[in-house]
Length: 224
Image (tube, rainbow, N blue to C red):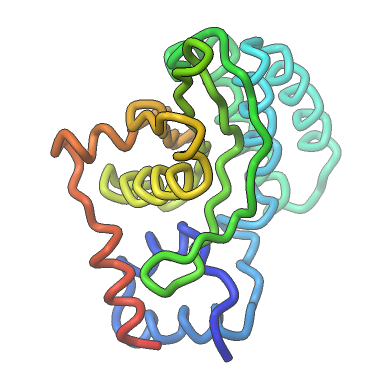
């Protein structure tokens, strides 16, 4: 059975696995098994969704409201694993209560545009790319496009891991928007919401972060 989609996070995970575990991961992708809730699925949805909304509105009210909502859930839930999930989301959200989201905006006058299909074929693989927002900015007739992708992983991301996200994001925007917009590498932004670190595709072009996406996909394809 062919692989229907490869989430970018699976590319990151793939690099850290032994060969037998890499084969296991690929087999799971082939059968379309959903990721476990430990670091994927809806585990982080509360923090990611609130931060995403706060960025779009340039207002932290959504974060304050979400902290209140999740705190109530945390207080009434009796399952330790679920309480831990709520606590981790709350801990992340509290970091952003007074955060200046304009640091991730190439312009304060962003026009948020509709997202195209999430699957993009790259090197013969169907890579799933899921930024929270795509936006245009700049003078009419000479507009640029960028995107922001909030990611989180309990194991923690290395700069090179975030580089994989940024590189796929740039290719994604280039595939769908290059006819009508300038694809701005500095506006292809990936944010690890746990560490609050952000990188852009420009960091890869400048050589500050290594480009490892192609090598990663080649290694994965060899095991198919």
